[in-house]
Length: 494
Image (cartoon, rainbow, N blue to C red; front, side, top):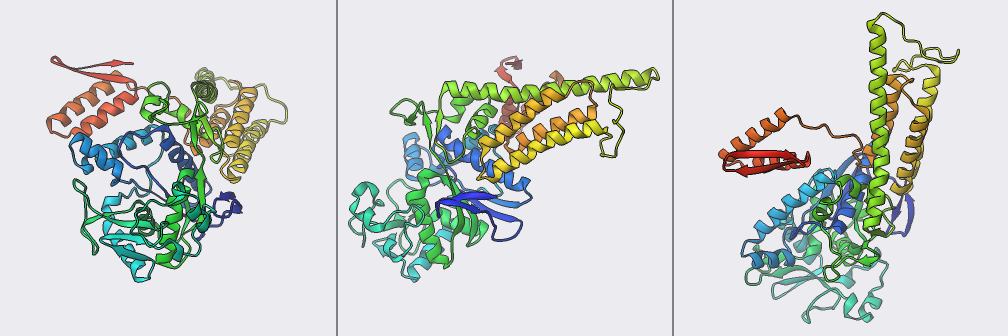
């Protein structure tokens, strides 16, 4: 397996620090609003990377944080007249709903910055003790020039940054020793959450948060650090500086970054009126269509979002879903034929060639059916070859389509149920590695709906509103709308 490492700017053979195990950190969202489709791309991409690594047999410790203290969160809280914690808790819950809809699996650990303040204070103190940080009236800065390798990830030169104008400088004030020094700890301002520290009551800078959470949950040196390419500088560059100066060893072996998502070939922004949340897109398209769209291009390629491209993704995904549905129908038909024959004491004889002797495959397949199955399994090798080449999901999806075409051309109700189900499993299995659900959801029976509504009513009576909301969301995902009326709860299918 080869992966493109932003650090070296080339593809490298993937060799883990510890055989059979992967320590992976992905920068998560700042939770002050519903996540937008730009947030969704790294979530989907690196969830898929994780799934593929597990498919290859690795044990993956996957850590992705929530930044739950930030200027934007504080501004939102002040705007609504509530606490920053209330804002962050609300949007963490909403983010998790969107992640579940997109079939993004929960991380091994989802740390929150506000729960790791003590570790941040300890790391800052270590950096001060080693001479890499200094305190000016309660604000602690990192001495960027003291880390000789600063710029090795973004491939930026410090002198070029210094002469490049304020747009390239790390934000700061005149009190810094050097304009490129960045903040590790800042004193509190009126109306802001704060924590006590040796330097001032205040809060951590953004960059120190990920360094600390990665170290706590994965160790001082990790295999993969990932995120959007907008984080390369200054965030990831600063993480490297802090972590390597504090720990005295390399921080991350491989750095993976996904490219930007554009809207109709323009950068997404609220001012242009082309800013879309995941929730807004899911009002028009199934979540699986959005996931498929995100994986239809290589993660390092810029991806353009448009209605036409989403419609194309919808149609493409339906081709796979229809093939799976058709195989399910063929399997049921094959099963029915065999049962009907056995009921009247007949022996089922398929029109097979003379060399179709039964062999021991574990499925009871004939030689010719074994050959068909082997042909289907060959596409798994093509899929793996694509994913082994820097997680090329576009080529992996192409392999799935080749398998679909092969299944459509080679299978009919004349084949055994065992073969049909085995080929269907090949398709659903490869799609599953991509996190794509291509089998039809089982529809809730009316009695099941009524039972869930009764459970929801009981939960509300017990003031267990979290469970009540969970049931409502579960039913909504099944296309069932609840209406709370004076006569009780009524429901209808969408």
